[in-house]
Length: 83
Image 1 (cartoon, rainbow, N blue to C red):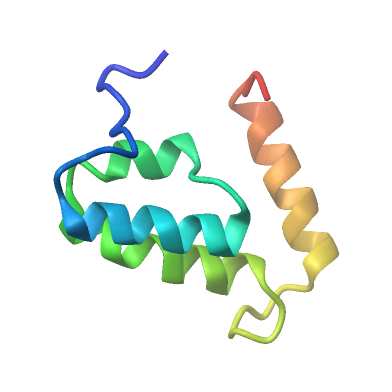
Image 2: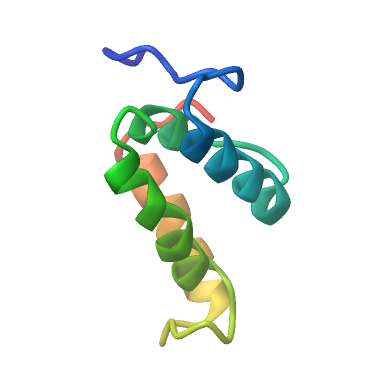
């Protein structure tokens, strides 16, 4: 369980709402990690571009998609993620 509340879609911050909308277009949803980082818009504005480079082919990541997926699964397992 998060120690900070998740920032909801109806937040007053236009910057956060815009970031959430970009996340929906990119991922189809707003991840809970992004909802936590939304408490700091300065961090939030770099999160989606970083995620894009790490997850999408052709955007600068030197690791192939299969290896990236395996790394994400392994890190999730090591951290005992419930999803």
